[in-house]
Amino acid sequence: MASKPSVLLVPVDGSDGAAASAAYAAVLGEALGVPLRLLYAFPKDPVDMFGVPTEAPRSEELEYFSPDAFARLRDESARKAFDAARAVIGDHDVVVEEEVLSGSPAEAIVEHARTLDQPTIIIGSRGLSGLKEMLLGSVSQRVLHHAQCPVTVVR
Image (cartoon, rainbow, N blue to C red; front, side, top):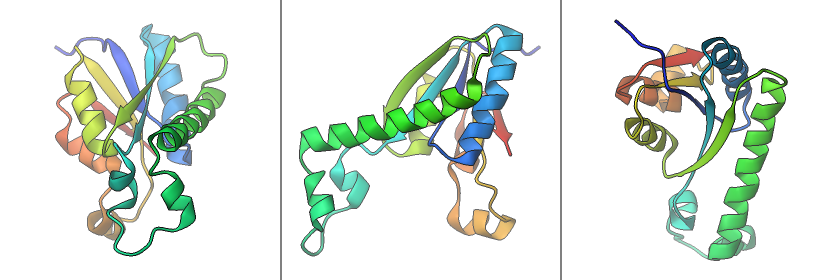
């Protein structure tokens, strides 16, 4: 028998899919009386984000190779994604937590879920066609196939 989740993990990135999943999770979290944890995944470091430069980096890229500037970019990006999710959550009576993860989004989300007891992941879909999804892959598909907890994909 399935039991009630302890937390709803809601990956966000500022996209329409993330907004739809946050709105759905807010209704579900309120009904179940469980908190939402908004997750924002960001690359570990500038090389992870931009790759190893094969030619002179552009000035806007070079700026972010500074640890302080990279941390500011991470924090600003996360704040925008969290604020967009909170806007659609609105006045729902649900506890909302925020957590920034480091690394590739799908792997970071799955790994975070593994550290928790009875989480459920509520994730948005980009809405790619079947062929594009197969060729490009997607975070939601990777999470769906690798998570060891329940996953709901919201369109």
